[in-house]
Length: 246
Picture (spheres, rainbow, N blue to C red):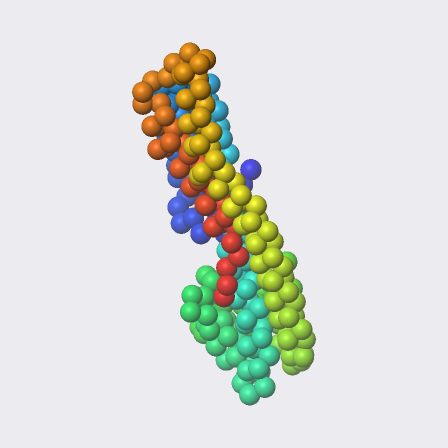
């Protein structure tokens, strides 16, 4: 299955990503096997389980990064439409489009290419067609079609309403992110505070009454490596799911 590496901003060939996926997953599995040996757990099963879970997680990263990049593009295109609706009242379409596409402090690469195409004299309809083909966002494709219609017909009345539609989509994305953040914060607090307490109680009861035996370094590796890794995964998931502003 093809991964959206280009949309995610991955600058290297696909085989480099797959090599990194295999290497990092195997390293995580080896660390899990080492910790499992300290606890007397089957290291082979631990290696296989952690390697598989790490591979699945890393395999999802390009899709998450591509979705984040797409949200950033949609946010900037919404601002572009609103600015165009104003500038077209006193500027030609090409100059207004070039200025609006260059307006963000950190323009999305797709918008930077659009501004460059218009600046070097590429026909406006061709530049807008390239904008539509450069993304998988249905909203951006709709905006490119509306801009093409505006350029051919000279009617910019629909740009403001389309910009309002972009703003509503962005507001909905912020609400969904707020809900996910609240849910993730519960898991973060659980893994950061409750799990160490439960583990300490389990070790105390197990060694005192149930005659469990552990390596002296086993609790250290669990508290110093496994739990911080779980928290790091939660934080990274929340960060990659955060909608970007223009």
